[in-house]
Image 1 (cartoon, rainbow, N blue to C red):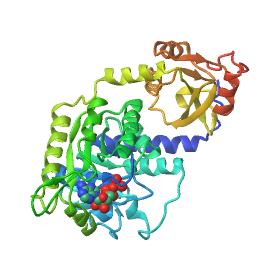
Image 2 (image 1 turned 60 degrees about the vertical axis):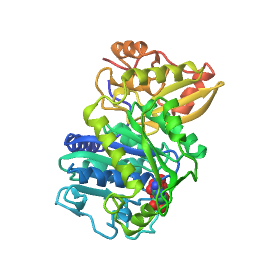
Image 3 (image 1 turned 30 degrees about the vertical axis):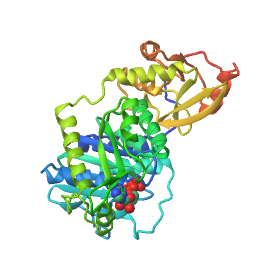
Amino acid sequence: MPHSCGHGDQADQARGELESRMQESLAKIRHKLLVMSGKGGVGKSTVAANIAVALANRGLKTGLLDVDLHGPSIPQMLGLTGFPVESDGDKVMPLSYNEHLSVLSMGSFLPNQDEAVIWRGPLKIGAIRQFLGDANWGELDFLVVDSPPGTGDEPLTVAQDMPGVRAIVVTTPQEVSLADVRKSINFCLKVGMPIVGVIENMSGYVCSKCGNTEDLFGSGGGEKMARAMQVPFLGKIPIDRKIVESGEKGRPLMEDGQESPAAVAYGKIVEEIVERIVQHPQAMPETAIKQQTAASKKDGVMRIAVPTAAGVLCAHFGHCERFALLTVDGGKIVDLSWLTPPPHEPGVIPKWLSQQGANVIIAGGMGSRAQGLFNQYGIKVLVGASNLSPEALVDQYLSGTLQTGENVCDH
Ligand code: ADP
C-alpha cells in the first residue's frame, strides 16, 4: 500500500541523514542538561553560563549550547561576542572558551548583536537540530543547554531530540515567577524529561559591607514549591552585584570572585548536580511520570492525537512528520500542539503518546499489533480516517460525522 503522505523522498533522506548525524554526535555526550525557566529575566542564562564554567573548572569537558534564538545572551556573558564561528570543512566548530569549555550560540551567527531573528517553529527546530548534528562537539562529559523562557518549540525540540536530557528549572522566589515555573515542571512531566532540580535565584541580598541578608524578593518560595511538586531543590543563589558586573564584563562569576556568597552558593549547587547525575543516574522514577499521566487523563479532558505530514493526516502513523495533539474540553478544541515523535520502533509511539496525555488517536492505517499496544496504554484507536487537517478530523469526531472504516494499512 503506497503512503499517502505526499512528502518527497529527498526531504525524507535529508531528515534521515541529519537524524543519524545527531545520534552520532549525541552518543559522544555523557550528560545533557536543559536549563529552563517559566519567565524571562530570572537569571536562567546566567545560571546556565556559571554552571557550565563551574563544571569546566572541575576538569569536566563541557559544552554550552544557547538555543535562545531570539535573545542569545551567552556570547556576551562569556566575552565571545564578535568571534566568528569556523568550520572544520565538514562541521561547525563551537567556540573555545577555555580548554574544557566550548560554546555555540545563535548570537555568533548574527552579523550584529541587534539583529532580530524572526523565525517560525519549523525553522527554529531545524536550527537546533543542526546545532546538535552539524556541530563538532567531540567527546563531552556535560552539555548544558540554555533555552528561552517558557515551554515553546525550543525546549520541546531539546526534550524530544536529546535522549537522556534532564531539566534544571530556574525561578526567583516571587509568586509571579513560581506560577510560571510550575508550568515548566508540568511540561517536563508531560514530555517525560527527568528534572534534576529547581534553583532559586535572586534569593535575598547579602550586604557587601555588613554581610547581613535582606529578603528583597522574599526567599524560600522556590524550595516550598519544589517540595509541593515533589521535585528536588538544588539551592538558592543570592542577589549579588558582582553577577551583574561579571555578566557585562564577559567573565562569569565562577571565573572571578569565587569568594562571594553567590559563588559559594553556585559551588554547592554544582556539587549537588554532579552528585545527583553521576551518582544517581535515574533522576525521576518512571512511576512519577505514569502517575502524572494518569492524573491528566482523569481530569475529564480529551486529548486526541493525529499523525500528520504537511499539515494533514498521514496514512502511516509510524512515518509521520509530527503528531497534532488537540485538547478538547467541554466539547470544543481548546488547544493544539505539534509534537515530533521519537524514532519509529514497535511500542515506542503508543508509550510516548500516552506520556503526552493522549487518550484517542485518529489514524489512517494501523496494524492490529499497534492497535493492541495503543489500547494497552488506554488510547482509543480510530482507523480509516481521510487526509484532512487535524482540526477538521476532530470537529467531525466531536459532531459524530467522522468517516472511519477500512484500515488503510497492509501490515
Ligand atoms: P534570563 O536568562 O532568565 O532572561 P539573565 O541570566 O539574562 O536572565 O539575567 C537577567 C539579569 O539579571 C542580568 O543582568 C544578570 O546579570 C542579572 N542576574 C542574574 N542572576 C543574578 C543574581 N543572583 N544577582 C544579581 N543579578 C543577577
